[in-house]
Structures are given as structure tokens and as C-alpha cells.
Image (cartoon, rainbow, N blue to C red):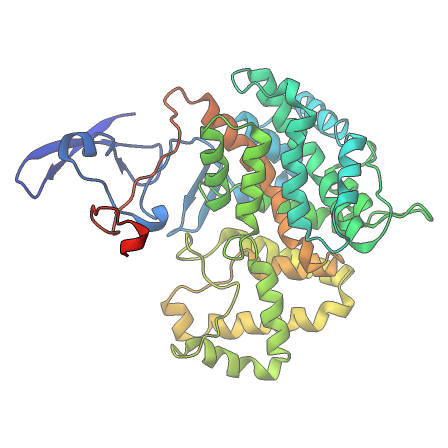
Length: 430
């Protein structure tokens, strides 16, 4: 990478040059690694909103232009022409597969979907009403107890095995968590079904009768997983990288990422959208709630509008909106009123100067919850579905981080605002 220099003058008047590193696309970054050593100061950036924490070749986002690319491929093209399994291969291996490579990769994933029976017994220790994300995090963390012989991060073969294993087994774990919640028998995976068909089978089939996967449902899940597969250095991905930087095994790192995703500010937005639509209740109430959203003194907010990264529009939202139409036409008769409400809310908001001025456009979460609801997936499973799609991004970033020869354990610094040095006082003199 070519380098320029950024000249910095400290409060004391001393000067230093900080190298400017240039990526292939996107903003330049100033390398401040020498700043404390030479100037005795840290930088201050709460939430790391303007800090590049690593060098990555996986995903690029331009929030101003509404661009999302995986390994250089626009997400719109992948959503139209590819499949989640092909996108997973791309994220993990940096290039699109040949037909032979795709068939081999698909076969590898299909053949490793079963769980060790001891892992299935693990579920019996949870309460019947345990949250699926709690079970997902715990069981993924337990995988290190079952596959400890193949966790050498320095071994590229072991890194591949981990990535394939987490991608293959996470749907089985997710489905088992769901079955525990609804009091039904666990369903074993079927190697003759593709990734999303198999997930639907494990979620909704029962031993008492045959189950036929609806192709529209499988297609919708495939699209959602593609659009959620990676999103640069988001909270959960950064958590996976940070946990992994200590040398922790990859299953522990992913379990940490799952826990981060569980936070409502990260993975719970589509559930919040459905709650908001329930609160609005009827098309006739939209104007009232839009006015509430514009009132600074009213705590109400329109969920599913705007994005921390995308300042113009979310490229994933348009794709999900189209799929939502398709799903509702085929599967969502009882959810049609809520879908109509969502469409009318979108129409009204997009014509309102307040939302236009603030670039508050529908994001990926606005319609995804409607799709999950139409597929009969309960709201408690929404973030689990997010995790299934994001699992391959976590695996790709963990592998990239481990293979980086310049990698270091993550160790942010701070601006200390506590007491200055003081002497201890014995308890009888306080």
C-alpha cells in the first residue's frame, strides 16, 4: 500500500509525521501506532466510530453511496445470481468457486450438519422457556469440548475445519433450541436438502407426518442469509476478532460474537419493527405516529429507518422489500394487514421532508421481521436467524485475523477520569 504523511503538531509545539495508509477503496487511515510512544497522548473515539481497528479484505461499505460489497462483488449481484452457500465460499476463500469447487464445498457442509449426541443431551439441561440465543451461545461455546483435537489456530487445515463446522452445525443447534421451546422432538438433518431447506425441515418437521419444504420459504431464507452474511467491523464481528486475538479457541470467539449480537441495539431491530407496527395498529394511525417520531420531546421512534453506517439508503432494504412481496403473496395471507401497514408507513415517511432531510430510509430490518413472521418463525428466533447468516462472516474474519502476521491482542486504552492518587485509610478511622 502506498503511504503519504500526516503532519501533527502537539500542544507542546513538537511535530511528527504519521503515515497515511491507503486502501483499495474507501477513506484513508492515519497510522497512529507511534503516537503515544513519541507524543505521550492517546486518541479518544467513543464507540470507535472513526477508528480503523484492523486491515481487512473481506467486506467494503460506503454508507454515503449505499454500497455493500463482499470481496468486491456488489451485494445486489450476489443476491440476484448467487446462493448463500456460494457466498459463504466467497467470503471464506476470497474468490467465487468453480462448479466443482462449489459442489465439493456444498457437500462438505451437508455432510457435517449432525451434532454429537452429547451436544443434543446438553439441551435437556435448559429450561423449556430458555431464550434461543442463550442456548445458541452456550452450545457453540461447548463445541470446543467436543472438537478440541482440531483447534490449532496456527494450522490452516484446522482453520478450514472450524469454518466448515460452524457453518454446517449452527442451523442444527438453532433448530434444536426452537424444538426445546415448543416441546417437540429434535429433528435430525437430511443430507439431501440444501442449506435453507434443511433448516426449515429441522424447524418445522415432526416425526408423525411428512413435511414438504416450501421453495419460496427456502428462497426467502437464502436471500436473508446472503444479506446478513457480513457487514464489515460491526459490534459482533469486532467482538469475535477481539476475543480471538487473545488466542481463545474459535468456538469461544464465535460464542462471544453471538452474545454481542443478542444486544437489542445490534441484532434486535427487526423484532422492534414488528412491535412498533403492532403499536401503530392501523393505517389510519400512521400520521399520528409519524408526528410523534418528529417530536423531539416524544420518546417514540420509527424503528427500521436509518442506519448508523448507511447515510443515504441501505442497499439490502430494496432486495428484502421485493422478497417480502413474494413471501406475502405465497405464504403471508394472515400477515397481509401488517405488510400493508408497513408499506404505507414507508410511503408516508419517504414523502415527509423531515425524514428526507435526515436521510431516514428503510433499512434491512424494516421488512425482514415480516418475512420471518410469515415463515412462522417466532420473534425469539429472529436474532438466531441473524446469527446463522452472520456465522460465515464471523468465521471469515476470525481466519483473516489469525492469519495476519501483524496481528496483536486487542487492548484499547482509555481517558481516565477517576480519583487521583490517594492514601489508604484504616477502617476504624474512616
